[in-house]
Image (cartoon, one colour):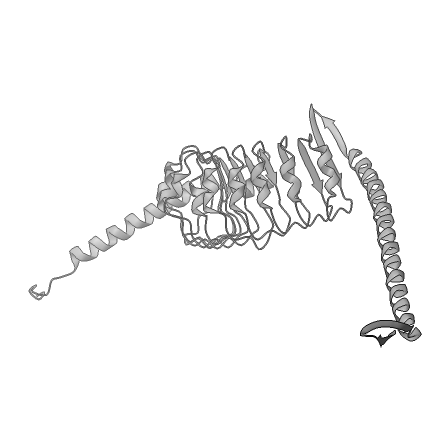
Length: 361
């Protein structure tokens, strides 16, 4: 656009306007483009809102379907509300499950479940959490929120770490972690579980009994069979209430003498180790009802008289051949041989002539 000015008598006046139509067209095109883009953006926003609404609706329907399926898995037995799934594919559990937080027991077996959901903390009424035979690789810290939990059963999974938060489950009585393969340690805080009486750690990678296990005040039943134990702690007798101890299929070569002071022990399984002797102090374990030393390279070859086959079946007889009577017979034979060895040693010293002895005539 061009403006022309004219001077008359000292005054300046505008005599005409010349408009550049190309510039106006450019401005008009720019505004039209902006308006078009604005409308397109508005349409996109509207489409997104509509899609979100459809998505929410679809998600709501999916939640309803999932919740209906989950409700079908809830049963009541002996007055306890149980959530049970067997041999169905549930790699993850939907968050909608929290709507069933009144459940007192989970029984999920062979479902390929890969994780324990963090919303587990919402199940404050949970007494039993049984997730055996799945593919769980981790226990979430939220497990510590389950203060009413009495049983945690996680055998046959893929755990290699136990969080210390588990020790906040103050009412836990039974813990099963068997056959997790790579599990080789426990948190030191485990001894805070003052009500834990049953512990299964079999078929893992433990090389020793953890100190936290020795310090469990109520422990009565312990299975550490099928690990890599190469020794037992000298203070094993700290487990004063222990009545059952499974140590089969390990690498034990020696038993500590203090095992003889485990006066509450009733069952002791030591088969398939590398033991060469039986401590004499075990003779005084008056409450020991069943013991098994089968498949150990014991130094002494001790055998028991065969019992009447009409009285004892073959399996029981075979077990007894390496059982309590065998243990007592072994200790007796070892003591007898030790006495003979000492007598022979003393006799040899007595009859051996000294260096200053006169030569015999």
